[in-house]
Length: 431
Length: 177
Image (cartoon, rainbow over all chains, first blue to last red; front, side, top):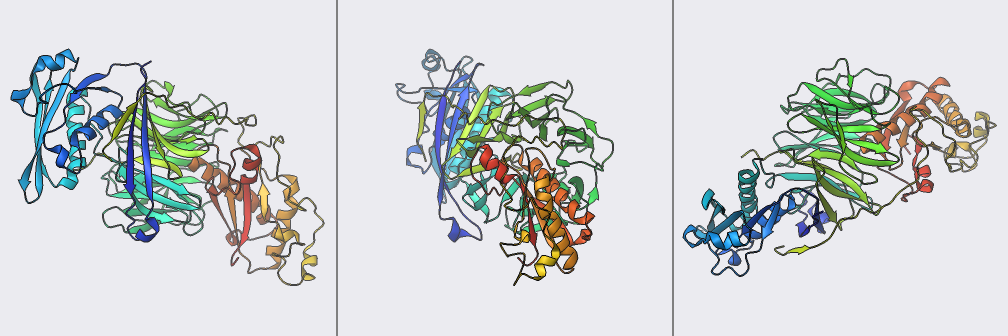
C-alpha cells in the first residue's frame, strides 16, 4: 500500500453574474489523494526561471496536476545547483541518481505588451532525449491555465492518454436553504457561481461543446429543465410541462435533450429539442423510467427503470423501442453514465444499505464496485475516461470525490462551503 | 494559492452507517416496521364535509379541521398510502368535490438515501398515489398536479430513521396558499 496525500487549497472567488452582491462569500476546496498499488512515474519538475516574480508558479501547478492523478511521483529537485532552465544546463546523471525518469524544465520571459512567454521542455532522463518542447505567449493572469496545458502535454507524452487538467467541473453547493450552481477548474480552483437560488438546483449536465449547462431548477416550486449559456449567462426553460421535468442528458450532437417527465402520469423518458419544444415520448412503461444517458455514438439511451420490480439499468435505441436490461446483481442499480469510449457504464449500486459507485463493462457484463462510501451518487466520467467524479456523504455532508476506473486512485474534494453535490465533469476544451 | 503541502495521510470515510429496513424486491412494499409521525387526527373517518360549513373562516386553516392536516407519511421504498392517512386524504377529496374552483398540488418527498433523480421519481409516485385516492372519489384529474422534491427538501435534517420517516412524505397544497 502506497498511500500519499496531496493537498491543494483553493480559494475561489464567487463571481456571481447577476447576483454578485449575494455572492461575496469565499469557499475553500481541498483535494486529498489516496493511491494503492500500481506504478508511479517518477518525474522531476524544476522551478522555472523567472516564475518567482509572476503571480502564479507554473511548476507548482504542473506538479500538483500530475500528482493528483496518482500516476506520478514528484522527485525532489532540492540540492541540484544550479537548477537547469536550458537544455544545455541539464546534467542527466544528477537526475538518474535521484531515480527520476522524466524531467521538466522551463523559463518565463517578458514578451512585450505585458505578456510573458512560457517555454517548457520535457526530457526522458534515461535516454537523455527531449520528448516535448512548447512555448506559450500569454497574459500573466493566464499562467495557471498555461500550467494546466503543460501538464496535459506531459501527461499525454508519458501515459499515452489525453490529460484533463484544462477541463472544468460543475456542481451544486448548498448552504442552508441557499443553492449555487458553480463551475470550477478540474482542480477546484477558480470556482464561479453561475446561478443562485433559494430553491434546489439539481442534475447539471454539460452540453457536448461545453458552452451550455442544462440543469433542474425548482424556482417555480416544481422541477423544470433549464439550459444556461456559460458565455452569456442567459437561461431558457426548455421543459416545464405539467408535473416533474428533470434528469436532462445531452445527445452527442448537442441538438436534443433526453429528459424525465411526469406529464402523462409516472415519470417517463422523452426527447426534446435542446432549445425547447415539443416532447417526444421514448419509453412507455407503467413504472418509473428516468435518468437517461446517451451513448457517445448516439445510438443508445441507458436509463433507470423499475419495470422489473426493482430499479435497474436498461438501455434502448436512442429513438425509443424495446429495452434491454443490463444490471442483474442486487436490488438497486440506478443512474447510468457512459464512459467517453462507450465501453463502460458507471452507476449507483446499493449493497446492504450502502450506496456505491460501480462500473459495468458492456461487452462482458462484468461489474466492479469502485467506492466504499455510504451514500455515493451522481457518477460522472472525466472526458478521458480515467476518473469518475461523484458525490459522497462524509460526516452528514455532501462532498465531491473521484475514483479511477480501476479503483486504485481516489480523490476527495472537500469544501468548507457546505454541502457539495451533483457533480458533472465538463468536456475537453474545444480550442 | 501557491502553497502545496505534502503530507502522509489516508482519507477515511466517515462510517455514518445507518440501519435500514429490510429491502424487498417488490417496489410497493409496506414493511410496517418503521415509525411514522402521527397525523394527529388523520386516522378517523368520521369527518364529514358538512362539518366544514359550521367552521368560521377557512377550514383548510382551521386547526380543528382534518383539512388542516396535509401530510401523508410513507414507509421506506413504499408509495402505499397507509390506512391511517386515508381518512385525511378522502376529506381533502370531498373538499375539492364541494369546492369546484379549488385546485391542488401534491408534492412528494423522499428521505436522503439513494440517487437524487430516482428519488425525484419516487416522490412523484408517492404524490400520484395520493392523487389517485382523490380522483377515485370524483376530483377531476386536471385539478390536481403532482410534483416531487425528491430528497431535496427534507423537513428533518438528521441522518437517522427518525428524520427519514418525517421526510418520506407527500404534502397536499391548494392553489393560492
